Length: 241
Image (cartoon, rainbow, N blue to C red; front, side, top):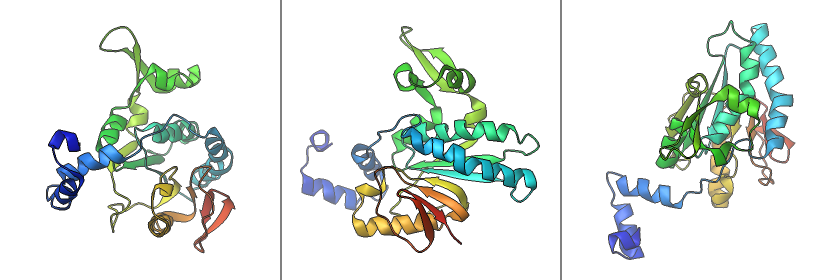
């Protein structure tokens, strides 16, 4: 970006600080954020959600103790995590046909290019090749690519319509979110922050959980401590009140 603009680091810093319209900041965030992701990344986490979280939530819906289930994919990148969570939840939701939209997912990222890609829900064969054929058949529509030599796979609307994709910066003082969640997935994000910032964002996310809700980090993000939640696995927290 510096080469494109023909300026040095100090000049670019001044440009960012004085960027009133935030257009350059948006480009900057897109350049420096990491967008590594994949469908069902860290499969053991999704298996744990399937076995330990979804059945009790379904039971609460069936018994009338709960009317809706809400999830947040925080740092969703190009959408694979949010869609994977939706695939897992769909089987449970399918048994709740008497409820209108029993679950919805908020998916956020600071990278605007990633959010646009996630919203479109179009993936190459390379990105979906490890998914079971049953998942491809149920949740994707294969379409020819522009060059006609390969296939693309598009998320079906009945899944896409249950996910809201939005741009969000974890370092903002206030998040424009009015929902309380049953699951927050925030994986491979916090360790990019300084320790003091990491603690603030971590505690802020716990504040968006329903009592009994879960904050799930990646398998490598351990060592966190908090009085607001019970640590049930090294990277999974359950809000106590």
